[in-house]
Length: 342
Ligand SMILES: NC(=O)c1ccc[n+]([C@@H]2O[C@H](COP(=O)([O-])OP(=O)(O)OC[C@H]3O[C@@H](n4cnc5c(N)ncnc54)[C@H](OP(=O)(O)O)[C@@H]3O)[C@@H](O)[C@H]2O)c1
Image (cartoon, rainbow, N blue to C red; front, side):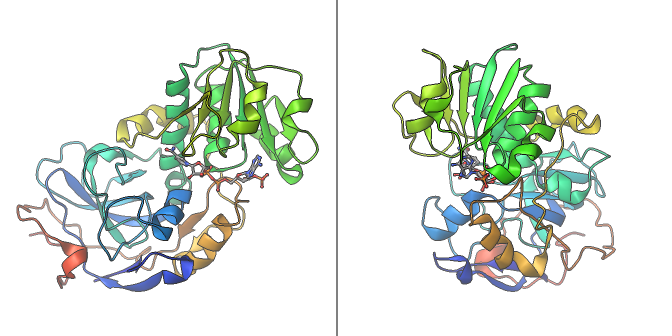
């Protein structure tokens, strides 16, 4: 059995409970991963509060994780048992329900196409902080048709997505000038990420900014106001739904391991860095406290969870699985004593 956080009804963070669940068996093309660290995202809050994605109860929340492959299903070709991997296990934007078993569990299952090998220089905590936010950040640039040498204005530069948008603008997409907004205490931090100019939204209104930019990347859903800093005809991307200005185009992440692999060289050379919110990493037992912090809307970078109970457990390495049957692990709470492998 394994420990996992779950909820059986929609509501505030207090609906979260900790309980024991069976360890899941990987299906075809899936890995079973021992989660070493996970990260929270606003989507975990929204999904817990209301039925925005179809999935049955109980739901184990969490999309992002980094961990160790402990079993693999038929058809897995890219990964071996013992590999360190990271990824966003929830393929939003694909047909069908999203997974009931998320990453706030000691073990989870994920399609091999959704994960990448962890860069050698990253801790599990750093790796877990990246997938969903990085995938979102990348997709915004794709949606806008951003070109090297252009200028960008990032609204919400200190958040999980914004910290990566700034760094990717500089180090992957070749922006010639990066301006970003945040509140007073985080101005210097955004400069360390590579922002050429940081606008303190507590003292400066968009209307006070004379410069006009080739691309406005709004991560906080403020396009009804931020649109004024865009050049005429410049793309304005909003990652919140629905965008609040008619010129803004909604952009949504694509979960894939391939898009993470493309970042690995930037991560290994240190050009791209994970930002773990300084109040964390939170212990696995403090998940509710971690949600409380994310829900303030003031997180700096990513809220990360580590110290999973099985963190230092040495699992017997399971040989390749031969799992053919469909196992509704969570829903039916099938008791198993260990990995479903032979
Ligand atoms: N479309 C997609 O695929 C997708 C994917 C991921 C996330 N999202 C959505 O995008 C939004 C941001 O996600 P996230 O993970 O980056 O959130 P987050 O980490 O919770 O963002 C927190 C940051 O927002 C900043 N912020 C709040 N109000 C601000 C303002 N008025 N001006 C500038 N910065 C402000 C805060 O900085 P200060 O403390 O300095 O204010 C804080 O650092 C969420 O609504 C999320 O659901 C969408």
